[in-house]
Image (cartoon, rainbow, N blue to C red; front, side):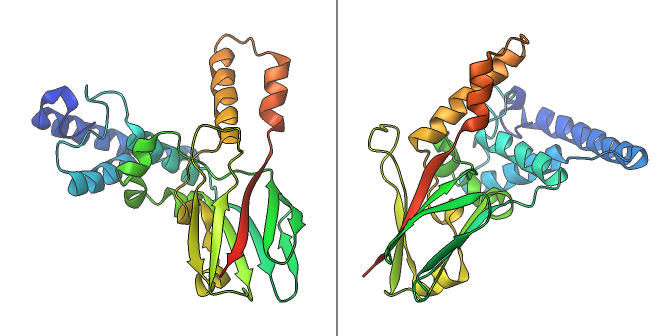
Length: 250
C-alpha cells in the first residue's frame, strides 16, 4: 500500500505493509513446499515505491490518490515480478548490421525487408513493450525498475559503421497522430557493442502498437462474458508491423 496516501495515514500504511510482507513470506513458503511458482509482486512493488519516493518525496503517489488502486509504477512492478517468476529472459530479438560486409541478419522472429548500405528496414513479429501511460516515462519509473534491461530487450548491433554516429528511429506511420517521430543518436562504439533500442529510445507508442493495445483490451473485457468474436480473436493473433529503422548519420 502507498506509504503516504493509504487511508491518508502513514502509520496505518506501515502496519498494513508489515502484514502484507508477512503474508508474502507465508505464500513463498507454501509455494516452495507445493512446488509452485512464486512471484514476489509485493517485494517488487515495495522496492520500486521506496526508490520513487526517494526521488520525488514521501507524498509521491505510487498508488492512486485514494491509496487503493495501483498507479502506473505499481502495475509495472507487479508485471515485472510475474514475468520474472515465469522465467522470461527478456530477449525479444537481435538484429545485426555489418556495413563492411553489407549484410543485415536477425533472429527468426524478425525479417529484413530492405538494406541499401545506409539504412535497414526490419519487420518484426515481436514488439518491445511501449508505454501508453506517459507517467511511466515522466516520473522516472523506469530508472527505479529494471523492466527494460531485464524484460524488454530488443537489441541492435551495428558493425563497421561508416560514420561516427548512428541515428535509430521509431518508424511512426505518417497517418498516426498519437506521437511524434522518435529518434536518438548513438556512437559507433555503442552501436558495435549493441543498443537496447527499447531502452535507449524513449519508447513512445506508435499507432500500430496502440491498435494492438486496444484490441487486447477489448478481448480482455469480452472474455469476462465468454463472448469473443472470432474476428477479434484472429486479429489479436495476427498483429505485425514494420516497427523501426536504423540509418547511418554523418
